[in-house]
Every structure is written in structure tokens, then in C-alpha cells.
View 1 (cartoon, rainbow, N blue to C red):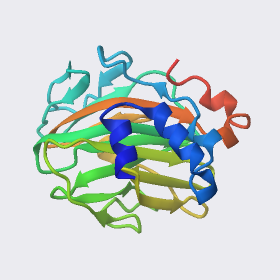
View 2 (view 1 turned 90 degrees about the vertical axis):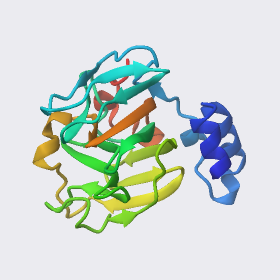
View 3 (view 1 turned 180 degrees about the vertical axis):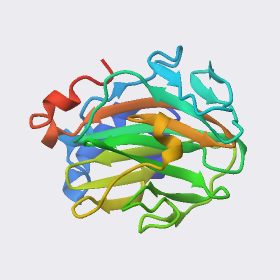
Length: 234
């Protein structure tokens, strides 16, 4: 999985990874059709495009540098919000992120879950917490998705979120870090990150770089949810 992550994040070889995974389907890995679904870029590496500063108040400067978006350190929150169409259900969302400076979360990825948004926190609460905010009103530090991982400053991490009608699944460098069922649970965001809705990337007292932001529909949901999924990234 480390080699696959490197191919994706360092070389951008998504097609090669899809072929490799397709050849390994019989070993219990994801089906080739799912892995080969075309990624749709949300950042061209040159301009902000439809990304806008989130307007938290006291945020740092946002700029494109060397094919990445640099989110400057804010007094508290800083970040960007997507102003275009977004997928709502049956999709995957992926990006690469790194902490450049600071000691708190360098990727607070807010994403739609049907009509409700949720946030994946990467590197929060002192630098190592991972989890979803919020589940049943409890934030990433206080629910069943809470875990801890070491994140090194200056290192890129591949972040991927999968949303289906049944669950939210999240991966960091192809390691599954969240598997949250949706039935019987209330999904929401903390009040502070409302400006990130419905799709945004935030940091807390931390400077971060993000790149290779993209999404793709999941094949099983592409017909049933076509009206909701079809607009993003076009």
C-alpha cells in the first residue's frame, strides 16, 4: 500500500494504480471498475479556480504556490471553500495535504453526506488526532472515530474520503482510519467550520499545503445519484 500511495501522491499515477489494483481484484482488493472510475479535478495546480477563502475572520493568506494551495496560518481557523457544484452521495473525495508550520490540524476536510456536511480532522488537538466532527453532536476528540497518528511537518499525506448511503470511510496513505455507519446517527459540523460548508478545507493555527484535489462518483451510485453527483468538477 505504501508503493501505491507513492504512485498516487508523488507521481500522480492514478491510472497505473487502477491497473495494478484491477489485476489484484481476485485477492480481495477493490474491483477494477471501481478503482478505474475517472477522477475529476477540483484544482488545476495553477489558479484557485472556484476555491474561495472561507472568511472565518483572522485567517491567513491563501495563495497558489508550486502546484499547491498554501493556506496561511490564521489566528485560529483559516481555509478555503469550494463555490461550485458538489457531489452529495455515492462518491470519493481525495487530496494531498501537509503541515508546513504549526501544531494543530492541517486538514479539516468538510464534505457533504447527503444533505448534511461532516468534517474529517487530520492532525488536530495538539497535532495527532484523527476523527470526524461531528457524530451525534460529539466532535472528533469525543466519538467512536477518534484515533491518533504521527504527522511529520513537511511530509505529504494522501487523504481520501468515501461517502455512501450506508457509511463514511476515510483513508490516510491508503490506511483506513474511519469507518462510520450512518444508520441511527446524526451527522453535522462544529459551528466554527460552518463557512467551510458544503465542501472546504480548513486549518487551525497552522500553515498547510494542499494539492491534487479531486473527486469521482462510485460506480454503484452513478445511476441512482446521477442528478446529485453530476455537476462537481465540471
